[in-house]
Image: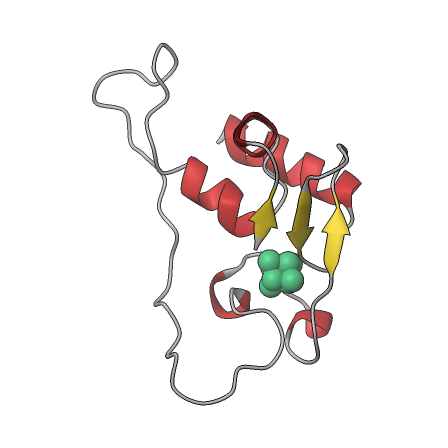
Length: 103
Ligand code: SF4
């Protein structure tokens, strides 16, 4: 769903799933002891049968009609070599990233 250097992906995750995963782990020096860690709601979809659209759509809070069918193409993030498979443009991903890290 997302590819790039570790530094780029960890510091600027673009895909909602990557953002969700990183929100689930404590950050040394930032996460306070006893703080509530995030989670990704929903159930992992069955791998049996053909899946149309985004494989994360049933669990993504940003999912829309374009996510349900067809092939989701890779998009370039802000750095060359950093790509993610999502219908959301990079500027929207950046806003979502800020919103997720503030929660
Ligand atoms: S393609 Fe749609 S459902 Fe999949 S991660 Fe992007 S916004 Fe969410």
